Image 1: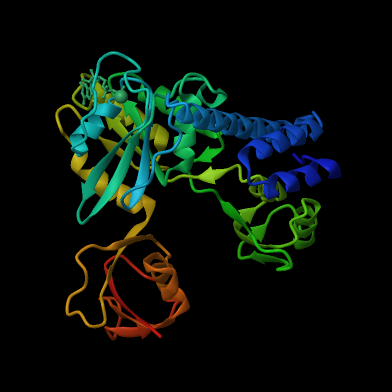
Image 2: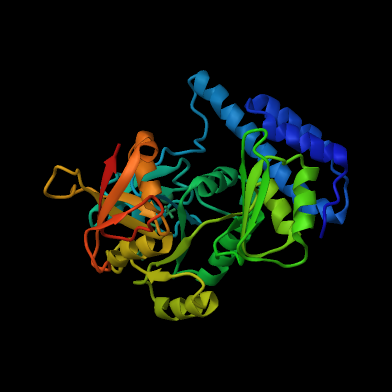
Amino acid sequence: MPTNLPPEAKEKWAEVEATRNPREKLQRMQEFLSLVPQHKGTLKLRGQIKKKIAILRRELEERKTKRAGRGGPKFFIEKEGAAQVVLLGLTNVGKSCLLSAVSNANVAVSAAPYTTREPVPAIMPFEDIQFQLVEAPAVMEGSADGRAWGLQSLALARNADGLILMVDLSSDPVAQLNLILSELEKARLLVNKPRGRVDVDRRYMGAGLRIIVVGQLVDCTMRDVEALLRSYRINDAIVKISGEVTLDDVEDAIFESTTYKPAVIVANKLDAPGAAEKLQQLENFVAGRMPVIAVSCERRIGLERLGKVLFDTLGVIRVYTKEPSAKEPSQRPFTLRRGATVADLARNIHSDFERNFAYARVWADRLTFSPQKVSLGFALEDGDIVEIHVH
Ligand SMILES: Nc1nc2c(ncn2[C@@H]2O[C@H](COP(=O)(O)OP(=O)(O)O)[C@@H](O)[C@H]2O)c(=O)[nH]1
Ligand SMILES: [Mg+2]
């Protein structure tokens, strides 16, 4: 349903976008909200903006308490390793137990509910890389509306590279999963790959507006998309549209509200009586939309699959760099995402590397001639060895 925002609301949103100071941003967002007419078409938008306001306000409060030395709730955990994966689940499903089973973190496992009130990070090794797992405070009904630590957990999820949705086979795993999924949906976090994607990459003033469509516009034309963008004063941007996209999806992207997070379901307590039957119900319900890993964290059963499934679901690839003068590549790989190119690698190593790039040599089994001389656009794969030559 179209939002049909009045021009002054769109102008105001452009002001929100241009504001960096969080306190002023909060102020402008509230002004924006007051300019949004109250009808059915704007219901979703109003919900999204209210959530943004709530999160921003909590962040500001957090800073204040930090300064006062009191330490409020943590909304962000600094990323480490190849990817940050946030663990979401109801209380007592075994999240803390999973952390202690796959890492050397010292976490409190307890039969008492809501033991974990702060996000707990831990490092899980997988082959020659590491994943960072973060246990979020328990999700419950109303999390997305800000109940208990819910807002905090969903903010953590939004910032993560991927999610583990954890359910308990000694209880009702389908009901639990449904609850998590509905809270995620309310927070505009998608765990299934959307049919289309819109990326709005804002550019410096005067750069102009470029719209690249590699997919299909479902209910509109290029001209409609351009008019919508311009009505929000987006005149300098590269907008990439892939897959199947509606005009609503484009507007969503302007508010950066919906994000896709690859997710893996971990079904715990496989040792519990009746667990096999519950697992079957869960698998029927999920129907292959996400991978399901059945484990018993307490008995350490099934956990060895987790690393590989995360690796594949998140699309991680490892690239081993080699100095032109060295005989052997480095033992520790760079981790990138599937589809990454030599340019992404170069940028990862050092910003100068991309600017001064001359050529690269790549060793890989899939190449007819290895090593092969390649340029910045070459698509990398897991296990590639790369030697970068600069001017
Ligand atoms: N039967 C069984 N109980 C488990 C398993 N994993 C965890 N538990 C128990 O479930 C309770 C909650 O565990 P905890 O890790 O604190 O859950 P959290 O609230 O999700 O962090 C504890 O009493 C654990 O001993 C398991 O694999 N099997
Ligand atoms: Mg816990």
